[in-house]
Image (tube, rainbow, N blue to C red; front, top):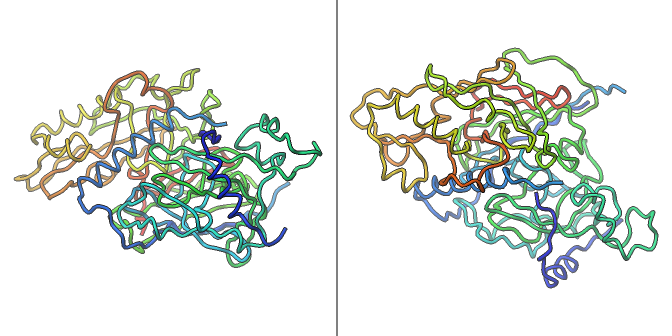
Length: 468
């Protein structure tokens, strides 16, 4: 993540400064993954929509692969709904400020800073996604909240994004011990593959009705964004993430099928707070340990170890070194709710796709659909009463098996005659595209799975579920 903003113009900074006006100085949380209900559509062409999602998934993979960061208490639970969207993400509704203002946020396990579209001057370019009207994106109004304040340059939370050297920029602070001097923390710029956002950091109340409030939650007030149709709530592993700030023991979700995009169908996301570390495993879940990449640049991500990949009953001969990061940090697998389609580096993808081609040799390739959708391989299944597609399975360290339902890795594209593999890769094989995780498990492949991030016990759990 690139948090600096060297090209943030002086004019933009004046706009931010002029518009940030403030009027005053173990539980389970349940939230819903939910969609915003806009009526504007930039494209209804299914091939173009798929092409956009495939392109965005590859671009996000490039960003993630070249990442640049930086006593027992009774547990309680918070719950919030999760909703799917046609632009490829799942959103939750969160409330910030006093009185609370409620906005939608894309739930992202591959980044850590949470931010919202901020002030009436918020500008989002290239944000005309299906069912999204950029002129109607809801924004947070800092001047309507009595609990918000800008983050000072010497506040330790400023270091979370910019590192300890940020204090060298605090030249205007007369008192070196001041944690909230008049000079603010520098503006941030964050890249998300094809998208980006920039603004200033705030400390604000995060409110879970009716009675749970977390004070001084670090959140970004974004003034400008590109290709970001909503704010983001970061569930990564860095200090600024929501799990870190709320000291979560675990969080879990169950993603409803993508066929419900931009509808009111949702599922619940659970957040377990408290410092207890109950080691109880949920019956029926397969578990595999999380581990940290040896390269600090990738410590933000949730790494798991895949032992083998099967297509049908045939093990794909992926080199074992691909599944574990080397000393340089390259290789391994991460779980990323912010990616739509699973990404595999081309050497892995080619082995997997060729095995599908071999086992589905009775179907002809639909090359034209591949060209316009950005997906491959695609097969023409017209004239076949029953579609014979081999199962795809991931076997994880510890023995847990994720046998994907057919709808999670093959999908009908266009009319009913063509199906495509819903996994993406780089178009080329240049070394510049290598590095970082070799496999990024996206949200399309997580549909209708109960997913658990057990942070207290450092493990990833999953099981097939009907998430409706």
